[in-house]
Amino acid sequence: MGKITGFKEFDRKDPSYRSVEERIQNMDDFICQVSDKDLNDQASRCMDCGVPFCHSEYGCPLGNVIPEFNDQVYQGRWEEAFETLFSTNNFPEFTGRICPAPCESACVLGIVKPPVTIKNIEVTISDKSYEKGYMKPRKPSFSTGKKVAIIGSGPAGLAAADQLNKAGHKVTVFERENRIGGLLMYGIPNFKLDKAIVDRRVDLMTEEGVSFETGVHVGVNKKTDEILNDFDAVILAIGSTKPRDLPIEGREAKGIYFAMSFLTQNTKRVLGETIPEDEAILATGKHVIVIGGGDTGSDCVGTSIRQKAASVTQIELLSKPPVDRDETMPWPLYPRVFRISSSQAEGCERDFAVLTKRFVKNEAGEIKALECVRIEWDKGDGTAPPKFNEIEGSEFSLKADLLLLAMGFVHPEHKGLLTDLNFEKDQRGNVRSDERYATNQEKVFVAGDVRRGQSLVVWAISEGRECAHHVDEYLMKRSSRLLQKKGSFLSEEAS
Ligand SMILES: Cc1cc2nc3c(=O)[nH]c(=O)nc-3n(C[C@H](O)[C@H](O)[C@H](O)COP(=O)(O)OP(=O)(O)OC[C@H]3O[C@@H](n4cnc5c(N)ncnc54)[C@H](O)[C@@H]3O)c2cc1C
Ligand code: SF4
Image (cartoon, helix red, strand yellow):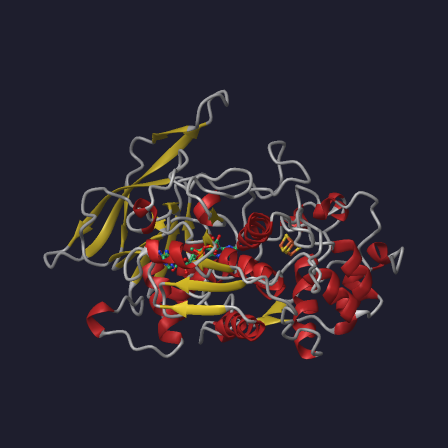
């Protein structure tokens, strides 16, 4: 390691954001990177801790080899840092921007001081690798003659496609939407992840030999059987896209939408598509209520603010989390603490432990308010799921012209593709697989949110890589150079 005293000399320095007034004027990314000198100092804070929990099971799900690339950045050995990072992570340009960075929660320096800025170092390595030309198409130098279909082009499908293409298989990705990327494209807003970054990766993969077919909804406008007949192996990477609903009185009111309808439409508008007036979902001039306190809800908040909503309020059923780690979430676990996202900091009211009882409509059948009640949670003795009780006399109402439901996703969509082949499901309704990521159907494998339930981009990439390994093994009866475990490296010159 480069500088033994770095962690003593330098405090943590994060990138700054453009001011709220400036950034809410458009949908652009608003992060202002630290200088090269500051980044070098930050990399030197990695302290040769001996047991780097950042890439243990508590840290990075990809097993990114963090101390090594920190040291290479500190030494200015950018090309080596790039090789180290890309050996475990196909898409650091995504994770370096939107990962919640469990690695940093598990950083050993974090026990006594703010942890190393791992995520920011990661995105800088990635950005520099494009600038300096290290990141270029790496076409496979051989072909196995095997064909693999991947259904769904989110991070899980893309990671599996990238790996299998490198292993010499002919990969085709089928996507029902008009653009590739899954939730990277039509979920996470532009101000968190510019779509040019997704397109740049898709272009690179296309040059490397991966085929992409958009507008193909398998099980709807393309027969599932056709895919099974035409390919040697198939990977389902269709995400977990069935949103959780709130079927209470007044749910049919006009002006109540699922978060994804709002977010997808906004991204399409930003990318230049015209949305018919009678289908437009706009927050402009409206009192917006977002139900759900997670990432999706936060993205609705930031988008509504940029669309110039009159007010934005986000409510959550769970209690407000503590500000600091408590005994239920000791280091190195990822803590559920009170956080303020950049969107929430832009001017939104937040309320916790609130139960929505009824949606109230006006004469035109449009939503005009919500009737709510405060609740208190009873954790019990921990042997049963926690319960809540309504607090008598705490009823209140909130004015609403637009209501966005952002309460998560229950499971993948079952109708069509999944019912066509009678895939076995787990208790939560996700597609069941064995330890090889294989489903109950011959030659069909599964990866990402469709298998593990709603999760994170970093987990989707990890699942795509692991699944690719098993598919390669299935096709070739061995998988010598594809990564088997996280942290191993797929050589370009696979045998
Ligand atoms: C609004 C929002 C914000 C988020 N923000 C973050 C974040 O900041 N950081 C983070 O780490 N995670 C975030 N997540 C979670 C993350 O995006 C997901 O965990 C991840 O994208 C899952 O990847 P996936 O490849 O499994 O599925 P997806 O990204 O959901 O991709 C599945 C793809 O399959 C396609 N598809 C489905 N059925 C078919 C079919 N029959 N035929 C053809 N195509 C089909 C879908 O159109 C979609 O493109 C967010 C999620 C949401 C909803
Ligand atoms: S992918 Fe996420 S968890 Fe892994 S090193 Fe990057 S920021 Fe950390």
